[in-house]
Image (cartoon, rainbow, N blue to C red; front, side):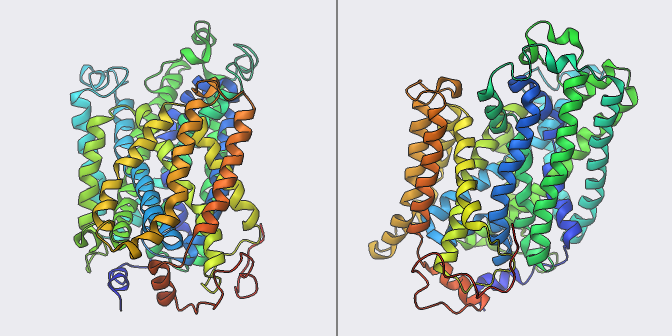
Length: 554
C-alpha cells in the first residue's frame, strides 16, 4: 500500500448526494449574495441579471469537466491533483497554486463580509468596525475571531462538519429566497430598469467585467467544494456530478431573483446622482429592507450575515485542508501536511497552515471587494486546467474507470477553455497582471522541490508545463494591449479583442492536450485504480469510447 493510499484510508466516506449538494450550495451561497447584487449593478446596471446567467453558464461548463475528473479520482483535495495527473509537476503545481490561492482567500473574505454587515448596526462600536473602504483594527480583530470559529468547527470530525453544514445550508437557502420575495413585494419599480441609462448604462463590456470581478465568479466557485471532499463521498461517481450541477442551478435561480429584487427596490432618489455606479451601501440588502420598512427582514439579514459567510468559511476551511494534503502528496510540501488524524479523519496540520495563511490575507486585504477581485481572477486561472486535463486523460489513459463520462466532452472542454480565457480578459488590466504575478510568486516553492532532480527527469515536466506558463504570459500581454473597455492600451479594437482571446483559448487548449504525458503520478494513479494501460494509450484522442461502462448524455 502506498503512503497516499494509507493516508486516504483515514477518511470517512460518509457524505451522500444531499450532504455534498449542501457542501456545494453552502459554498456558493456565502457572502456573494450579500454584496454581489450591488457590485454587479454598480458595474452593469440592470444588465447585471445577465451577468449572473453568464457566470452560471461559465461555471456549469467548467464544472462538467471537473465532474468527470472528480469521479475518476475520488480523493481529498481533488482540484489540486488533476493537472499533475495529466501534465506532471510544473503545470500541476501552477494549477494547484492558483486553486489554493483562490480558495484559501475566500475564508478571510467571508469573515470580512460578516463584520462589514455588522458595521451597519446602530451602535458606535459597530460603526467603528468599517471605514467605508476596509475593516479597521477592531474590525480585523473581530474577523480574526470568526476565522478561529471556522477552523474550530473543522478540528474534530467530518460528521460534525456535515451535520453543522447541512443545517446551515438550509438556513442559507431560505433567507435569500425570503429576502428576494419580500423586497419584490415591498417595492417593484420597473422605472429603475428602463431609466437611468437603460438596461446597459455602461455598455456590454461592463456586463462581462461584472462576471469577472463583482463577486459572481467568487460565488459560483463553490461548485468545486464537493470535488475537494471526494475522499469522503459515498458512491462518488453518482453523488459528485449531482451535487456539482444541482448546486449551480439552484444558486442561479436564487441569485437572479435577488438581483431583480435589488434592482427594483433601490429608491429612485438614490439613482438621481451618479446612477447605478453611484451606489454605496455598507449592507446593501439590509439597507434596502430598512428603506422600505422591513425591519424584521433587516434583522434577519444581519443575523444571516454571520450564518451564511460562516457556513461558507467553515466549508472552505475544510476543503482547503484537503487541498493542502493533495499538494503535499504531489510532492510540493513537507510530509507533515499530508498527515490525517486516524481518529477524526481530519488533516489537522494542513488545517493549521491554512489558518495562518487566512490571517495573512486578512491583514493585507481588509475589504470584501478587494478580496473578491483577487479570488475571482485566481479562480479563473485555476479553471483552465480542467478542460485540458479531462481530454488529455482520455487520450493518455482511456482504460481509467470513468463513472461519469460525458459524450459531449470533446465539445464542452474547448468551450470551457474559451469561457475561462474570456473571463480572465474581462477582469481588466491591471488586475489580470497583478494576479498572474501572484501566480509567479509560488514558483520558488516548486523550484525548491523540482530543480534538484536530474535534468533527464525534470525535462519532460518542463516541456509538458510550457503551455501553461506561456498561456499566462500571453494572456497578461493581451490584457495589457487589449481594448480600453477592459483596461488595456487600446491596441486591439473593440469586438476583435474578444475574438482574439477566444482563439488564444482554443490554441492553448489544443497545445495543452497534445503536450500531456504519461508521467509518474498518472502511472501511480493507474496502479491504484486497477487500470491496465493500453499499449498505444498515448496515440490519438478517440480511443476512450467503448471501454467505459457509464455514459451521461449532455
